[in-house]
Image (cartoon, rainbow, N blue to C red):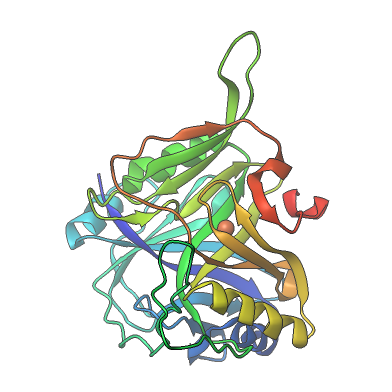
Amino acid sequence: MATAIDLVRVIYEAPDLDVTEGFMTDFGLSTAARTGQTLYMRCAGSQYHLHVTHLAEKARFVGATYAVASRADLEELSRLQGSSAIEPCSEPGGGSVVRMSMPDGFLIEAVWGRECPASLPVRAPNGLNDIEHKPRVNTSTRIRPTPGEAVRLGHFVLHVTDHDASVRWMRERFGMLPSDHFATPGEGGAAHGSIYGTFLRFDRGRELVDHHAVLILQSDTVGTHHCSFEMTDLDAVMAAHDHLLAKGYDLDCGVGRHLMGSQIFDYWKAPFGFRLEHYTDGDVVDGSRQPGVFTGTAGETTQWGMEPPPTFFQ
Ligand SMILES: [Fe+2]
């Protein structure tokens, strides 16, 4: 089985690259490259360009790209039914790519051998003086509302018509592990009913990874719920929140703290009907974590903060 080690890109289509570039810049990303047909945005971190928008008549989510550990992984994936051959990747950073189509038609790419420019400078996290640990001594915190602190792409969320088939497809190809599940309440003494959502993470053994790189949700519709970018710290999330409000963008839901994954989140409505998230302080896990099953209500998935609007769960 091939091993995916990182989420490196999400891919969209949209009818206006200028509008997309303007929003993404205010959201804290910067332009890595642009052609007449494609916009490549980056965060500050080592993933390089991680948000791709192709010019098209209609807006839609296309898919995502994982980095795999070796060329042998690409060779293995290329031999599977429905996979492309190994091809040179024409995107910035190059490398080799295998393209696959998962259930419901999402494009999933595996890349290896990219050459990425150096990370951009970001400020160090602000030390928080909590009741037990007070690392900030003889100095003060000073924050300005500003974009520019989005450091990396953390995860994306898929709405699919067959949860089990999509999870199986992802696990069989990339060795991903379940971190948690959503399930209906159990009946007749059962611990839970049917599982309709699965958080999947990369398997890097003892190395720490995010609680999830993708969440797969059973749905009547096909598409993405959101993609999510990790910020330097809570001050970065809140400063970006104020910046986006001042720019007149539409807040969707935030700030609050999730139950599953524990992230402090802030969701914004992006142009063309897309939804993007800033987050910080998410759970990290290693290969030993066993998945839990959550059977509560949608509202109970927020521990504190803004109540998600009904449209958030559609
Ligand atoms: Fe998220």
